[in-house]
Length: 200
Image (cartoon, rainbow, N blue to C red; front, side, top):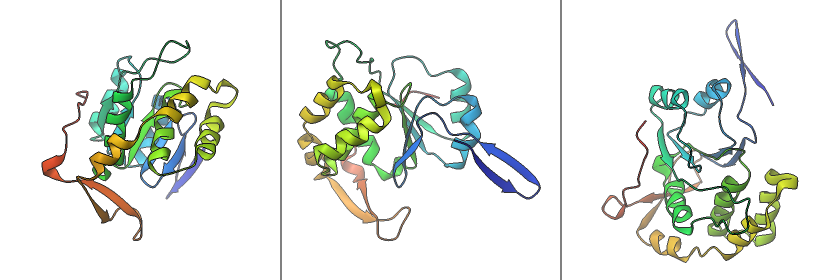
């Protein structure tokens, strides 16, 4: 997928990262961004990135984040190829808290391929948004394709969103952001837990 933007006499090819898509207003998902994707990401005006892999972020990616004042939240979640490797629930819960805080938007979620860890986080977000499990699983499988993992679907189904709902009791609802009628969520300053970030 290539997007072309005309800026006067200059044509710039904007190449999105693999598996890129919009989740909803101000939330995006993808596979790992390469330098060729940086012009595309710059046009998203990102404030934050949630990175779901244990490997260190490459220096050229960190330089891009520094140059564009983008905050990096890293959750060191191992891949789930083996049945005995489970996704840490606490990490997903903390990532969800960052994800629903509109002050971090626009935000990009990514892992390596944008399929399993990213799909699991988005699936848990959909449960929080009261999607039915059938729709949650269909969305997960659309991005995972033939590499869909039963362990991820089991994790999403079993994930308890009540702790996040309890956290939302300390949240005020405001209409702001990308459309006049979009309900957004903001943490009250006095209740906000300080998330751990990776220095960039």
